[in-house]
Amino acid sequence: MKVYHASGVALAGLVPLATVIPGGVLPIDLALGVVMPVHSHIALNFVISDYVPKAQRLPARAGLLGVTCMTIAGLLKLNTQGEGITRTAKRLWKKPEDPFN
Image 1 (cartoon, rainbow, N blue to C red):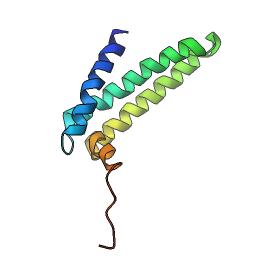
Image 2: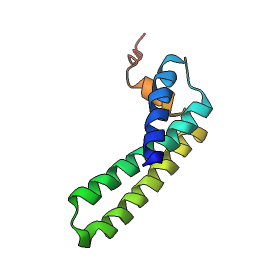
Image 3: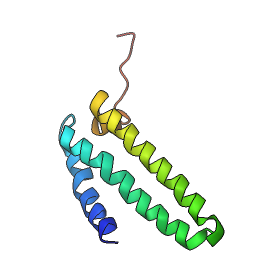
Image 4: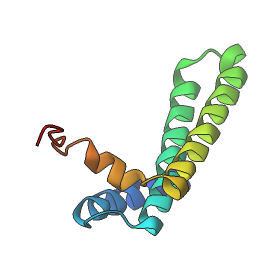
């Protein structure tokens, strides 16, 4: 539970910081690439505990662990070999350039 709350506090600071800094900063992107999936993983484990029948909890948690690991790996690749989480997210709100001008 302490990790979940700590990750929430980290996200509360990292997300606004990432939005106000122009471009992208690798340490912030790397931190977001770990903190976001870990925070989501813990929250979804709570959902599994509350709503999934006991007989199906182990497979559900194993699947969740696999998805979390793939998410961390994908975000790490985006941060190290791509443009990073921050620039990718900011590009979603940027007006596309007109190819005819």
